Length: 143
Image 1: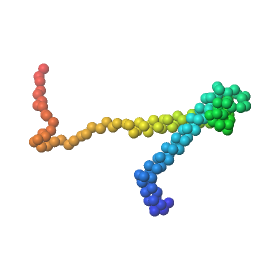
Image 2 (image 1 turned 90 degrees about the vertical axis):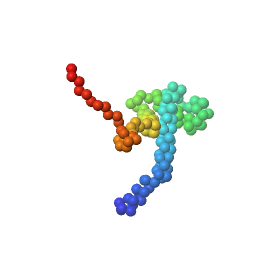
Image 3 (image 1 turned 120 degrees about the horizontal axis):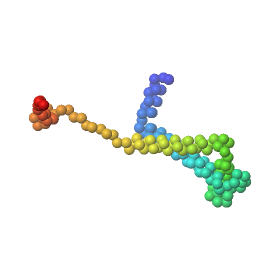
């Protein structure tokens, strides 16, 4: 990489406006992936509304999601009847993605709201107006 290219890349990465745009885009992508994962999990958890050999989706699903969406939801819900060893990997992946996004958001929230416990240490005052800490005389006692 040429030095000029590195300088240009460094300038792009340090620009606060471009950084804010990148973070906003990352947040949009995160929201999209999170919604997809929740949709998959939601569809899989609707397995109790269908039978394992059902051919047509319930009418409520057709009314809510349309014919094509209801068929997709039926396929996901039917896969919810399968044992874990045979079920699609997407169920486990969706659960992991959902948990990861939630933990990441929680961590980010903690970083933003974390209070710092800071003690201000000032130099020792040396003027007559501020003589410094009080010093007490020390006495030795005989017992």
